[in-house]
Image (cartoon, rainbow, N blue to C red):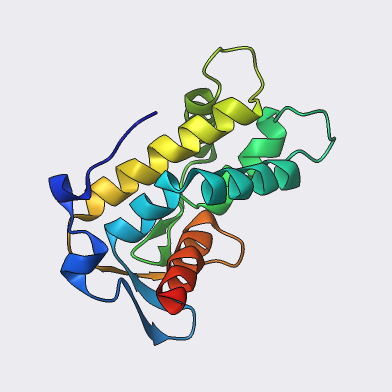
Length: 162
């Protein structure tokens, strides 16, 4: 298990106060600790990953094909926007990017992604995102059902319960 120390690149929740501050509808400030805490809460993270995987596994065979996973990867719009503005991107370049992303998930290079591969790679990517955020909050518009939105809701629930 990868252990992440928030003190390496970000402050823990107690150091930064309320980790989630609603700015306007659907727009929130997200701290790296929010993402780290969600990923390290194995029960909550695993439930979310299983649900996301089941949603993507449209043929219900327990594996994600390139077609199944690429729909989700394409929703990220990695190259199609620049600061929220749509830009024209070469379709071949886009296809290459999405194929490369799929290969990141397909650890055993068998052409499919199983639940464990999906969980490990999603965890790695979320921790890399948190690490890249540093200790300052990042204002984001979160999509319904996204793992980032689930992480924010998870943190909010913990704050309300405290």
